[in-house]
Image (cartoon, rainbow, N blue to C red):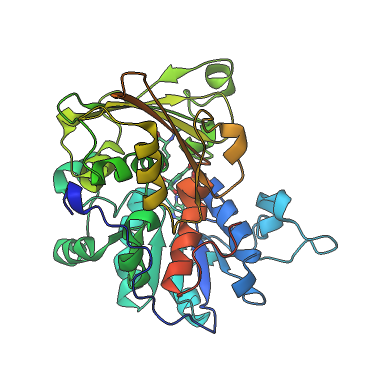
Length: 372
Ligand SMILES: NC(=O)C1=CN([C@@H]2O[C@H](COP(=O)(O)OP(=O)(O)OC[C@H]3O[C@@H](n4cnc5c(N)ncnc54)[C@H](OP(=O)(O)O)[C@@H]3O)[C@@H](O)[C@H]2O)C=CC1
Ligand SMILES: CC(=O)N[C@@H](CCC(=O)OP(=O)(O)O)C(=O)O
């Protein structure tokens, strides 16, 4: 996909909407993203009476005490029923016995890399929230140090994997067997930049700077020295400078080179939310109204992208616990220097909400169903 052909796959042929909902399953249910996925699927209007199968790690003994969703994610408890949603150990027999048609993997990259081929072999579609299948170029993927049991099969599947950003790849997602859900930072930056690059407005000679900040849940539930309260609280720190693994997603999806973009993530002392501030120069002096028109046209059929009217800019408090990405911009008086601000909830539009948006597309439903 060249810059000039970043697709606005908005209103092209839709497959017939499924009238019967697919059976779904979630692996990695104990994690932050898995918990949000469970919440969204349990309340999805198309999945009433058709709850997802909730899966823990493989081989867990059936008798451990944490066997109900309510135990791990008490916010999802049902009044009067402490055992509404059992969690089962992951097993392929269980997945096939329950008739699972779509498997969500909210698991670490290495585990997703291993399980995706096994699911596809069984005729099960996968929406993978990890980074395992997002990158087509092996040089970009090398950062994950992934190992494949069958390298040829993995290479074929890799080519088939669709990058699950609905605003960029709607049509491909509708017909996909394997959707690689985007990274959270990558989603926020891609949604801001794609319209302007498609319109060929950006002066790439001057380069683009992406200064992004994320809440701590982006790092998952296992605490580390960096995410420990004593390090993260009352603090703001840059990390993975010139080396964050989402850079590859930006390069591949925007068709730019590493010398044309600099991306620095920061850890914000809040639980969730990402704010990306993106600095660039335009090729020619441009009116703010022209930028607005480019964004409005690009997102006219994208119900989960909200454009803020200049001079208002997106803020984390307006997107937390929503499935939206909010976009806004400010143009300098010279008509040349542009600052874009993009904001989303890393666990929702940056992960689980986007995964459900992809499920909706795969089922021929409106992409915002269950997400507003
Ligand atoms: N957090 C975020 O903002 C985002 C996360 N993602 C991606 O989504 C995925 C899940 O992230 P997140 O929820 O934050 O991570 P968490 O660390 O919070 O949860 C990971 C889950 O995976 C389970 N798990 C770990 N190892 C295995 C294994 N070998 N087999 C089966 N299950 C395993 C854990 O089990 P247990 O409960 O037993 O520990 C846990 O339930 C990751 O790939 C992450 O990169 C993507 C976008 C944003
Ligand atoms: C704050 C924080 O640590 N954020 C995570 C990104 C979360 C994300 O999008 O995850 P994946 O690409 O792993 O799926 C990080 O920078 O590694």
